[in-house]
Length: 227
Image (cartoon, rainbow, N blue to C red):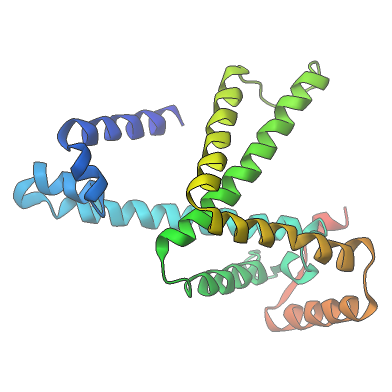
């Protein structure tokens, strides 16, 4: 992790050293503009490196996001069908399919920057809440056993950055922030109807979908759910 952080810092220093502010702001891909200016006939290397980096990042995101949905479903926060795993390769196939469907739906948004604003606000907001909770636990339970302890200055700085991102999103993109907030709040009635006070026909439908996914994807519930 320190090595990756250092590489990112050095890369950004290189960008700011070579490119002007106007070039950075007007560039569609800063790394490509940097390569065109510094690498001459070898500038093709930079788009290739960006593609490799994007592929690696996407690969990690698919692994992490699908497991996130999988664990959430296993804990009862999402439909039970998403918590199933394939009996042959032991991967959460329904969760991967669910992630793919969500991705396809997001592709209907024409403006990429609007999508970025949606995701940035929601991610910064929940990160802000999570870090606030961690700091509160450090205050209320300072002597509790923890797998790792870091200097309090680091989460406080991170909290300030997240707070800045949330405030800037609210001021610069109020429409996207409003839509994102509505989507977040829509989880309240869904939670009430499916978890807190489940409706019978919804529970029956969920059970039918769960059974169909088990047969179609050759899946079964994760054993940890029953341990």
